[in-house]
Image (cartoon, rainbow over all chains, first blue to last red):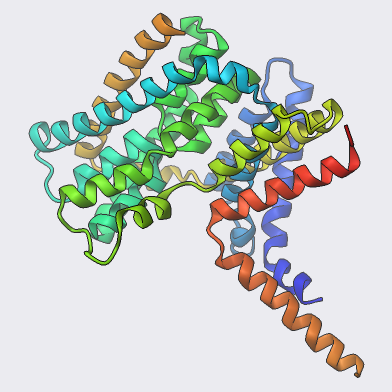
Length: 331
Length: 47
């Protein structure tokens, strides 16, 4: 009984996410060419910015990030390791160059061109280069950044998450990219994991898988980036060993993704099991994308300052342009 | 042992489970949930 009591606060929010996912499935099925995942995000944005999310639903809605990460773990079942290994070194090279180059570019643009001081340039650089808001928070914790700087940087990243979520699928179609090219391009250029996966799946299932895998490779660099920043700012505590800090920032669900990919590619899962797991993964993505839409508040995004927007815009334009050339040439 | 004792023991177990679950990093939670779902599929759809 007590477990039910523990679950009770989450029921309204989960019902809201489930209702949104059902609506997206029905509408996506009824209108040809309309992706349910795109409808899920749009429905969430409209609901959050018109009627708002009821306070009782907040705890359940907050589980959308867990749904996204669990969906990514299960996505491992649909990944062909041979294909991944073939493109792996190229994609990994692209990711490392984009993250390292993106960090240096944002720092230089923020401090040199826009004259932003303090930790804000580093927060913006981490958010734009690695993995969105979670990178802002992780690097902010390492640098002991002020709450206002954190909020500012996170809001800037969220603004671009919202814009790129719409712009990238449109650009991908206009540019005539293949599913793999588009997935890797979005995975290298966009910011937070949810919007990257959503944009990828808005293009096609294959693009969604490539976008997610590429983004996971970027996310795995967060620990290293956080340690590099702590060393650069000389703010690292002497009692906190590097390996521990690296591990603390490492996204653990990535291990689950690799484990499930190994299980599936090891022949332990029947094709019926893989189909069913993929369906569960799709369902979790739908729920997660409704939650992602619900977390986008247009009014809050309007309050973002011009200088951080300028920094992140330069970063996005340069990195996405170079990444586009790279994916077209190499993949 | 009375029904009340059973209820109390169940309540503590449930609370403990929930507390342990909430203490986990979200990445670990996703990993556990994902593997649990795969395990269920291994049982339902054997190779």
